[in-house]
Length: 267
Image (cartoon, rainbow, N blue to C red; front, side):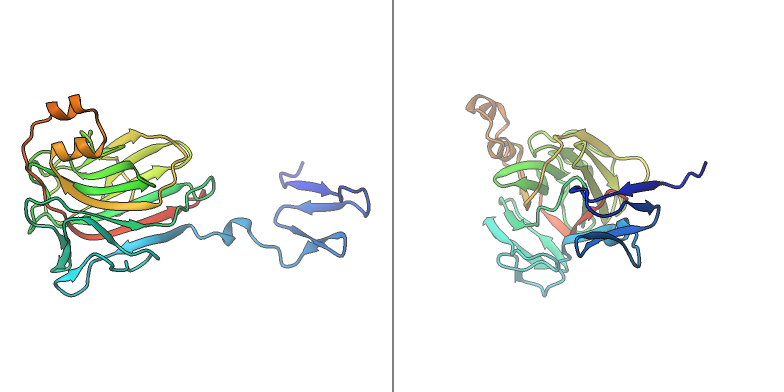
């Protein structure tokens, strides 16, 4: 018996003849009848395997204000909501012990077919102090709700943290020296979220979290702060906030590039 797939089709109203459809063939509805489409096409080839929906490499001249700047790929503009942020030496650097935060809109493209999101962050750690006793990093938002945080979790070590939100980030990664690139992988179908070293998601994950499936992100935030700032941002009760050490120590943001990619089900 042949292993080739065969399908027999007939219009639902009972008119017309049956059409046999073999593997690799396609049908079209023309003039109230089914006809073989020529040439047939591979269904999967109609979809790009990887689509970059947002990217910014901060290569503007020194002193460029982040507020109002368009990213390299993406329709939104950066909106600085706390402090100020400028670009120097191709780095978005927020040196100083002041809070900074900036948002940018990203297209919400995740669904059952395009179900994997990749967030790649290239951070400068050799010249600017992104890893200091405070925290600094990148968050994915749905509306006003922070869903995932990736960055320097509170503490002086050269480590990375992953958490559904920025409060008490878990799973700190091993020390990664120099200009460091990490990639977050979120699966819309399962909620599995993993963090990898480098700009690919091959090899063993540095950290992983089971976060809610079916999330669609529409904003990206870069920010820094102290542990107390994170508790306040998370909207925790006054009792919890009061128990957090009120040490006003903040990391700097030192990012060379950001990129968001979406993969379809074949990748």
